[in-house]
Length: 236
Image 1 (cartoon, rainbow, N blue to C red):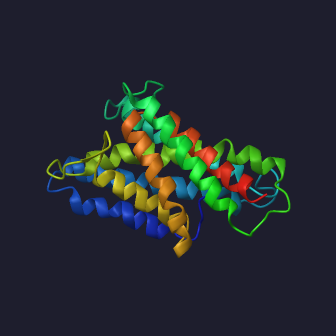
Image 2 (image 1 turned 180 degrees about the vertical axis):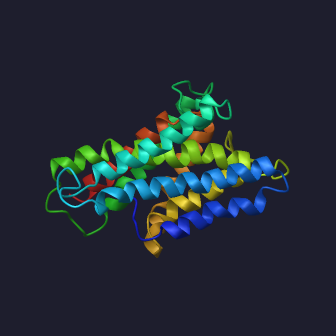
Image 3 (image 1 turned 90 degrees about the vertical axis):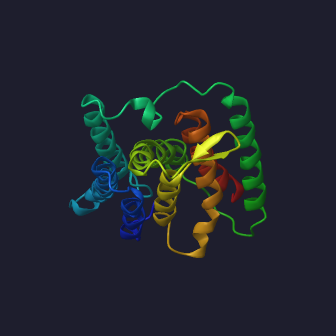
């Protein structure tokens, strides 16, 4: 779950893209767009908490803030697509998977989920029970919202912001560069500023690799939601 304690740090990480854009004004524009998009998401996500009265559905998870943030990100992406500056597939919004990517991607998801569940089960911490709403939330919104933002729209912007001389590296068939590093740092920052965030790192790298290898957000969204569910299941 994203935290509200470190938005400025996350924005700073995305802002680092400004240092690797080179002298190209268009690339610098994409870096600014990435920062603005993240800022808009964070603002919209926080908006329900500023409105008096009932702000969320239920008592545990802020559905309304997440959905508002997602709507803002999709609005920006839609405007860019209509202007011909971006293609939906550039942001991973496609069901088409890169040839030969699905078997290895699914295998990696199964393996990492198994390892994560087993390692989490070793903890002595146990939950007395998990409300149905929590299961529903974790099975839907985290992956949909966070993957659309980070490994979708922000990654597309970040990759356009990075100067071409800063080449991507092939990681087992997935091309990953400075743009992926920047959005991963922002993703980690929004999950907290403690050593506990290191527990999020394996998942963040998995989602980035899946996005780069398959060319789609479909498997990252599925993996993200399953990862969250596995954590709760392991602590029952």
